[in-house]
Image (tube, rainbow, N blue to C red; front, side, top):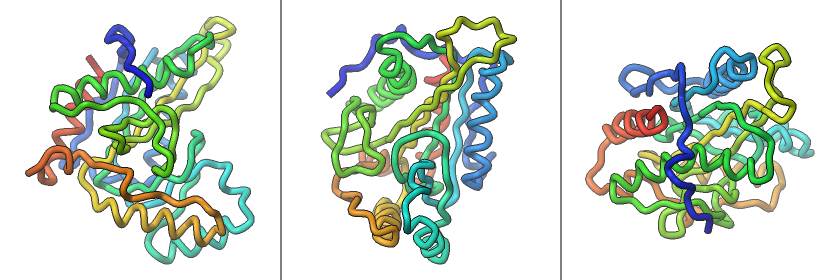
Length: 253
């Protein structure tokens, strides 16, 4: 288990985009959402802004890292999942297969970061710490930890009582030379996907169907996950809008 960083590590979000509510912004095509995340990162790379936040929801899809494209059965598995209504989309950040659906919330932050010892951990917690504090205000005690058998497992999952609530990933890019950035200064895109109000069983079934079609031994264990809707009994679809607003506010504070 990794203990949270102090509140002083919360990211400064100058020139941020506002949080997006589902009423004002429908679920995006996954390629469009990923494109907008990279556009945010590029603005930081070019020195157009020092940091920013982008929140979005995604149409049903399976988002995978580029490394999976090298699997022998990838093309056949992608075709099979497309036929089942789960198009496979490739992303540039690391990690593993991540099922997506409108009831999940994607959060991306971009910022400048020095490449110093411990910088990877600091970059993850620059995203996770404000979310942990926001969840604490709802009475939810979350922390960063690995959950073996959960989707896209990593050391910086957001976890509640041993079950995964959110997954995280990040990408680093060198700052553009014209910005005058130091040699060890990079632009970082840190991303989280939060299980908010969705039929999780359908997500894990789709992910496991892809693994089988790709002849991979990996499997997602449904029992290792929890959603905000489960943690906040009585919640309705309004939970998505409320969560978007809450997380947007905590990351822009």
